[in-house]
Image 1: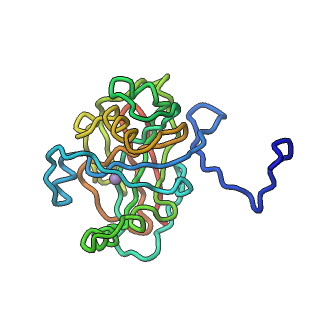
Image 2 (image 1 turned 90 degrees about the vertical axis):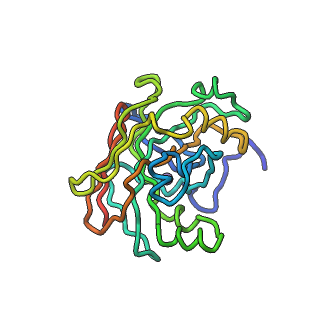
Length: 233
Ligand code: MN
């Protein structure tokens, strides 16, 4: 390939992005990592012992991000889609084997996300020892608010994380009860993958996950970060 010639794509490449609060710039997203069972009460509600086992990870497709205020199309192949409200961490400086003490230097900012889950397909995958890809990685499975730079809000270590469905409280927790803190998650993940600018990490959901239905209005938030609102279509 001659670098002086402009690249000709066979079709238009998709560059997934997140908006940034109070900015015209956008954050280009490279990968979306998710942490499983990172709040003790949620681990218990899913039938697990919340003892501090090593964190585990799964991924979502970057193009499954859905902006705040969107309609979330109820996905096919399931009768039991669940909401999981989570704080999202955005990485702007890459690295591997990142020490816990330096991990926050790699963070650009934070957002409020939903790890939407086809729970029935996840239960089947668990039973059969199969991957979670279809349960977690479907189209539009990652609604996410605008990013708020850490330069503005700092690095939230505690604060309420919550979700209401049609005005009824469903999920409630506090960032202080994360089993693996944000710096620990970054350090751990960076031993398994080289992190790069544009990576997102969904940090896990507190207790109270449950089913959504067509027409439901979901509003959730993370204290000090913001809110996220979607309607199930
Ligand atoms: Mn989750």
